[in-house]
Image: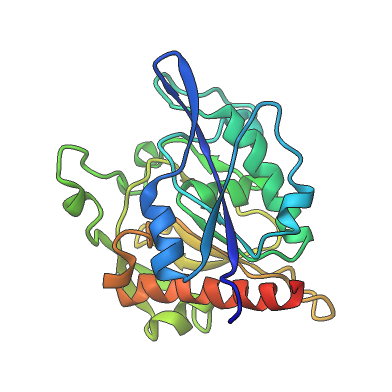
Length: 256
């Protein structure tokens, strides 16, 4: 019996009282287990960053999770952060480098919410810090006064790119997704192609495709919504994790 593929999840650095802790939302850990059938491995976000080179060689996939924090804007431009914007410099220092290392090693990557933004920034793209304040865009934030089941319920449709990965997973050009983000993609990084857009035109999903027929890119899919939420109850969300799992299993077979 083959061992389950190993999927790394970078941690958030969170302060509890006087002590910093390394933390990952349990819903992401459960989605790796229940949705992908893989084993989660937590990757600490330390300052200064750990050298992840040797560790990535032992993994079969990388899941970049959502988080309460946002990427510090100095990583993608010269604008200042706004008052009250929660940051996690240790996570930034670790994940932005991890994205590039994972691609270089052919490691499958699934990125969710903050993870989508990390992929875009790591590869040279930029972000909107407050999508809801930009003329032409809708407010994509959740109502935090509502129960979690309402916050994570389907909120708006996304249009899936014809013939794209998500189109093949969904079997349709339009699906409903949840929406729990204040920031969003502004300039798309080189090598990323759009997989889904919101009705207001905001990019909601991307994949890696650098157009090199002689050197196929590894699996990298990044979405702005949260497919980890009750993943086994939503066929589309489950399909995303199963596609990631298939890439991880292929990687595991090659590694072994």
